[in-house]
Image (cartoon, rainbow, N blue to C red; front, top):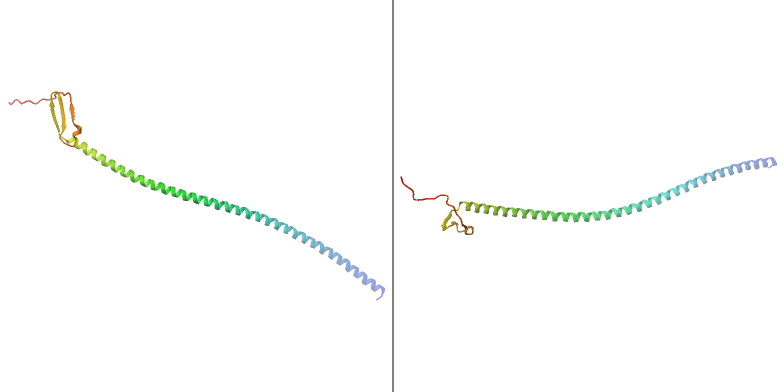
Length: 164
């Protein structure tokens, strides 16, 4: 090969070397951009993961709190249902007691009314001894209600009548 051909080959090789260097720099720059983007994406994903991890922890704590509150409220519901059952039972017993008391009162009232009617229709035995008036019911049941009058006034008299 002669000198001019060799210089041409060298010149072509130098051009190719410059193109390769330019391509290499472009490729290196492109790779640095890709690496930077991947690094940023990785950091963002790590931050998201930490955030999700924190959120999961908060949710687990909230679940525990809700389970605890649910257990407390379930116990309270059971207690209040038991208390309500006791009150309902007591209410039924009191209603029965009230009904029985009303029935007894009505029976007593009925008996009292019968006694009053009997007393008002009972005949009395009236007698006098000196200046006292003795009123005695003819019934043996009401012997405690004897009444004595110490003073008396004659309202009417009966005498053997005059016959026309």
